Length: 483
Image 1 (cartoon, rainbow, N blue to C red):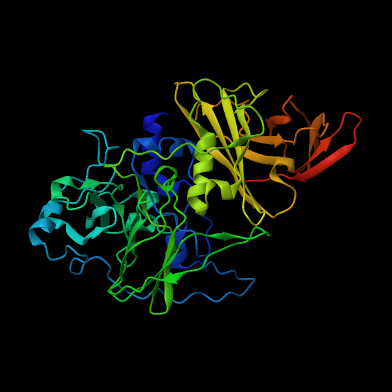
Image 2: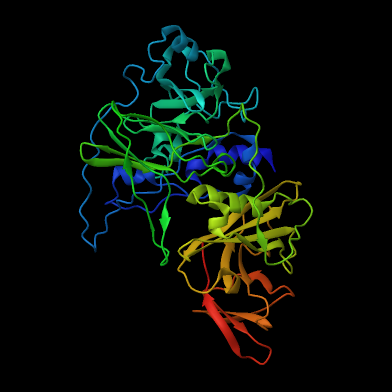
């Protein structure tokens, strides 16, 4: 893993999605929640370098459309979440709180002597917004002035995908064992900007400890996991936490893989004055005092794995752990299958493709794929190609899997390198000789390799693939999935 690339990715994380399209009807809340759900796989593969998974809003979309005449949502009620007295069971420990403000905000990914990547408020300006005992030990959320606000185009609210970065306020979570002294508290999240009227949160997947810190009058609800029904619709149900003062300190279902995969199944919702102001997953972290690693998942391989040297990041395990973490089901409930984990023949690249599916109890199927590539400097990186839910129907092992994959752009590709690829997998025993991409620009034939796998430059306008026998008979077809 190229460490410089990882650090740059974290520094620019909020902008990975690129500038959003302008929408005069988009609400402030929607812009706050706009975020790229899945980061580049190279970033995910490097999570061992850091300890934090930053919350990614999933639940709300308040973008109004002119032609649909959707009414604009009500404005977010004003609130000041963090400047009041310290909340939590340790709020009365004055000496303890003072010592917390003196802890280092220098994150492990920050190299000594580098220009600051993340906020680091002067000690005298810091304030402990929360300090308390939880199921995982002791936690504290500390705030102070944001010392790394973006400049230039990144400071334009219409272009910035993380409005928290523009805030004057920054925050960071510290944790320690039960009864920890301040010196035993460790920084576990990347210090970053927080909007002063939006909640902060933290979740420990190993113990299920969860803290949500909102404004004093906020109503806080929690959803344990999403529900996926047969038609691939995803929904959630929420339960009242029955908390007061806008603070929820509770224990929910543990999810050991959330510590390594990064996206927990649990989600919270905060309502203020009858308006939903947040509906998102909490920040989560790897417990620095616990070296326990969840066991590798038992996966069903439809083809023998064969990963090129230099790309042995176990992306099959990573994708499967993501699914277990994000949907809150056991591995047995998800019927995890690896359809392909191997090289990309015929591309001239040292690259690997990994395709994993999960079949929910409802029969709906989730397909995820990652492209990993070896760079000329010896580092590696990649991108998530597809993340799609499909309705119940044929078993996953009997389905055609075809998707577009846009390669990571590093600036070192030569002009003839394909920037987008078409990947096709067909079930064993179907007797096909080729795949034909069909779309607005015509057709393009792609030969299949022995394991029923094909990868080629993406044909312009391709929308679906046909699986064709040697005599030209079309055996099956399906739409091409995109990210």
